[in-house]
Length: 472
DNA sequence: TGAAATGTTGGGGCG
DNA sequence: ACGCCCCAACATTTC
Image (cartoon, rainbow, N blue to C red; front, side, top):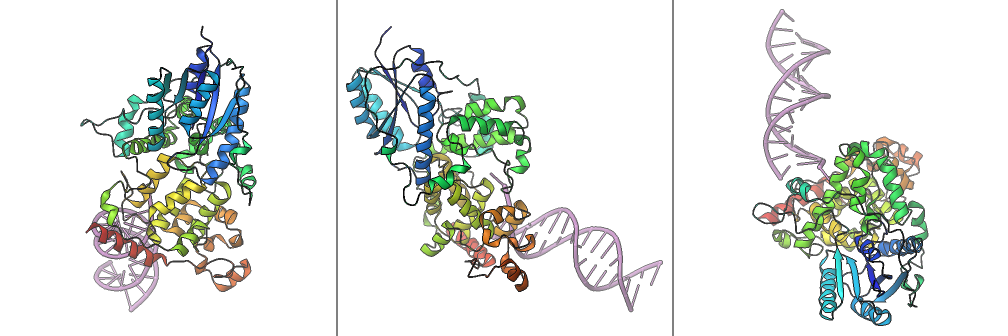
């Protein structure tokens, strides 16, 4: 048996279980070098919230690797240079990694792979983060699907929902000395202000936290998911697995496997895994999904850029409590409930007529679950410019959505505390509250809490007119 | 994975 | 007893 080391290059697959690249490397019995590169040359820099998450996720991965006898090496720079250096330093002749699907990383990987192969090295790549490769599910006319429902139906036969790989029992350690950057030196954490420590209580970052979240969710809440997933006021309405999934602390296959006992009651939940797969299909075939309208017909749409309105939205100061609660939840916890995402996104695009790309960028920066496929596809979905998109005339009413899905106003009270003393009758529409009610609640509109920055009815009519104009 | 406007129905109050 | 009006409640259409 050869003693030449193998490099396992970790990316958005920060886990030791169900990690094909790691498992295959371990299986060879050869020394394994586990590497993470903070890439400085990729098309898109990670957002602030994602960097914060990544820091802790790398910490957790490092501990998980140590438990099986391996060490995580950290480096920062251009991937191909770092791999070259590491090959030089260690004499490694094989590199294993799990595939990624966004354009710039794909190009980086392709270039590295052909270069290394040309030099006689072995490169093995694996599917680890999707249930099926985005190029496999095809329509009868050999196209990729552009509508979710038929896609998901057709995909069933191609999904790899088999048993997840176990954590390798032990990994042969590479005994030579390898320099590693310290985690701190990657400078992933925010310093001033240190908003990270305020987000910490909301999460248990790492694959153990992910496994626990899955177990908890599958153990009960999943059965009520079809109803409760719309209720941001309920703690267990959704799984909150998204950031774990985005960094690969858990795989979709592990999630599917966790639901195996009651696949039927988990159907609606697993369809969300389907939306993720579908988003990757769209991204794979439309590499510029985050920056260009999927439907070119939208290119002429007349947006109404306004820095003031954009900032009011970003900071949760629109004067619509449900929208503001969502935007503040995002800012404070790095996450926003999915029902609320639809409402806040619709508000930015349709009430404020601000380009969906502005929203996409903000979410990319502030979400801990920011995912190159889901984020882009979902913003285009709301804008109506995407595949299988929400119709142009679907304009969410920001206060009736609140009344439907946060019926007691608890969600608003939690994130918009200056309104917390308002009775539920007015909590989603404080501008309609009688003066004595406002006085009692200590609310002065325009002072302690903003008046609506746009009138709902007017904004709705303007949006319909704008969409109509762009269709002509 | 909407909302609002418009149309229809049917019970009850009332002359 | 009967017709008329009002207006919820529900259904359909439109954006």
